Image (cartoon, rainbow, N blue to C red):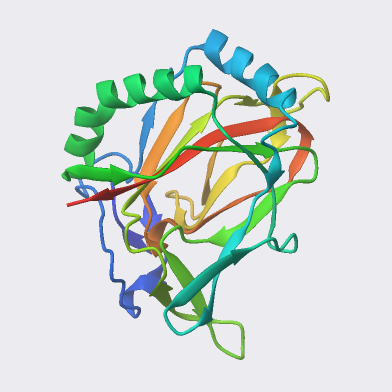
Length: 240
């Protein structure tokens, strides 16, 4: 394994694969990702979750990006790879999110030694029992050979340099079906490991925001939700 921070290692695969976007924070940081606690208040998270659960107007199934011809990327609904509902963020919470992001922007830029430029719209993503999202990198498609071994990555979203995920519900060991929490549904980084060689799994509290580079080092998946309700606000950012 390759040490990329004090506590985290990455897969030796990356010794032999060329990556276009090599953004990583300083290796002397404790972790190669940043977690901001209480980005949203607990009260705001709870009210947002109830609001989304009642929203049937903007609800739709989330899509997966794929390259259909060389250089042409389209998105389609493929539930074999991703089972997620997506909503629009209402005006009040959009403004609240923007205010909070402006407040924390200098912290994020300092941590990753970058200057943020443009950002995408915020996506509100809902995962119910049995929902999931298979392994993927936010800026690239993974290239697999006939033996199902990873041999490279092709950038399909070069404007994505940094990914942010804000959790509006909490991970718990055993969620209640009606509670604003979830069991299972961890955010797992497929190529990042702790000192014991275990894949890194994020088990958040409501209000936590995790920020990480969008490149293949941080390929990740959402494990199937076993019970409860997983709600996140996701955004991608360009940077220089």
